[in-house]
Image 1 (tube, helix red, strand yellow):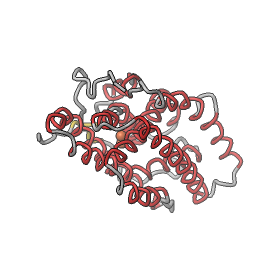
Image 2 (cartoon, helix red, strand yellow; image 1 turned 45 degrees about the horizontal axis):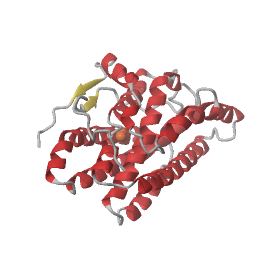
Image 3 (cartoon, protein in one colour; image 1 turned 120 degrees about the vertical axis):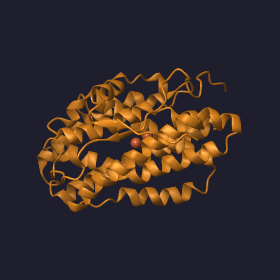
Length: 286
Ligand SMILES: [Fe+2]
Ligand SMILES: [Fe+2]
């Protein structure tokens, strides 16, 4: 099968690594997301997966580039440096965010589950690591796009926490092609790309649900009917996760899919309009 999409569009701007300039020291209100227990629990669950998950993305992309021929390595060098810089910053920021969650008594069960699975995955070929990274990056990119298009998901949230989530979402949309392009450059097959996409879909959805439910249980809002009304709306409502993410999820299954086919003007717009929330990091060359 031939793929006509270039592995990295030379016309696209290089990835910028940005330091987030918001207060992460002040503790979080218990229902920091607009007073909504369900939304808070779900975003908290996502945050719990990031430090471990994003470290794996970094490791897999680094290992993938290392086995490319020299000429291909040079082609990916800037892109991968930007990707690693962005993900490293995300995991650092979310580790600080998660420390507040721990203070609140929430328990992260998602990260140990990821670690257990990664120990097994790391016995496989590096192309499998990159395929899992590309598939998970598709999830983060479509969730990011959904958040940037329906910012009401963070309605009533403190500006510093809005900045954190919109900054992360914008960069996820920005580097959505990196792992996918690397998988192609490594000669990964369609069969394994899709097979691992289904595996990632299963684990991502069930883990997100389980950790969200556990957060609500620890939080004590588990038994309140209001929580589940909020949850139903957030997941199945008109602007909900399932109706909005079904089509973009499905896109990944197409043989001619490429992440860059989905434009992300909202990400560029958010970054351009909030230059007070971030500062570019000077990265060492090489
Ligand atoms: Fe990230
Ligand atoms: Fe990412």
